[in-house]
Image 1 (spheres, rainbow, N blue to C red):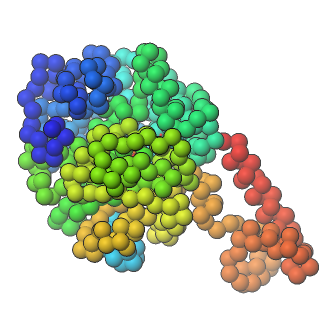
Image 2: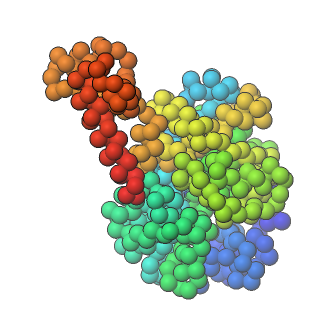
Length: 464
Ligand code: F0G
């Protein structure tokens, strides 16, 4: 009902504050937005959405970044670093090779902490200040924790993050650590971390800033506004399709909400709304499972595994908001293998766009759906890449080439360069262990450095 693509604007209820209120997507119960803390419906535990008496039009938008869209946000300004205004890269070679009419990459890795989470946090931390809460907290596969730590620091608030032990990429823990979050490593997966944080929030111990918090999604909506505006400016039309990685399905829900609000105000026609297409890793694909079987609910996967640790999630909490987004825009969802993700990560890197594995899932998904014919050659497509390459240096090392050790001597360096193709330390090391005689002393030295380097990397990842 309330999640229809073309729901008319609503009249303001008595509980609204300046035209803003919270509403349950299941039972329609309405709540004042900033008096008490609500994450889910007090009556039926359904998900809440932020509602506005005046949905936005494109003419309302001015300025830059997330706060350009404050006509569609609960406040005029927030705790900012600033965020948003990310590039919409052209990738002509990839476009041609994949075979679509146009292809752009919306690189959310270019936000201040290197992921789209900043868009949600600039709003979420502002709401926390308005509510006057003490400690901020989240469960995270890494990026949310980095963003919460940075925005909490910016807002001068205490932050606590719960991470699945050994499953968070190095760059993300480094950020949370340096920005001063208290980091708790849980012997469980992301979903168990979220269960715990939700319980702590229920006890009033922390203010929860996962995407279950409806205000987070308000900030993330601005990805949709930016894509529409920029695409229209460049091509005179909106994209046919947006392909995005799915974990908790927060972005899927947020983009759909952005489109619904523009349709409600009359700024966008229903047939101009891009088709939302979600991509998950094969080892963590409960949304894909639901969509491919035409189900209205997602069943939690207890065992999840993928190299794309950011989307190693078995219980996408925003599914009740995201599934209507995919169904009502005529979209679909697809699962991709870890190797397909790594290939896509290399292809994006080859176009100068450095992303972490989860981000590359969108391109891998596009490629797969184009190959199967589900995405047509005549479509204009935007792939969302959600996090920066440096977030997960170990994955980048594994997908990329290794450094080549050379002696401290120009002639020797030149000889090495001219000796042939770029090799990998792994190859050198293997040659050395297979029989030192044929490769000579320099290779032995190189192999030794190579092995030491690989051991260092292994040590780094086992310490995470
Ligand atoms: N891509 C990246 C890089 C992410 O970090 C996440 C989620 C997603 C995609 C999935 O987005 O949840 O909106 O479907 N990361 C969360 C975290 C879970 O804790 O950083 P979604």
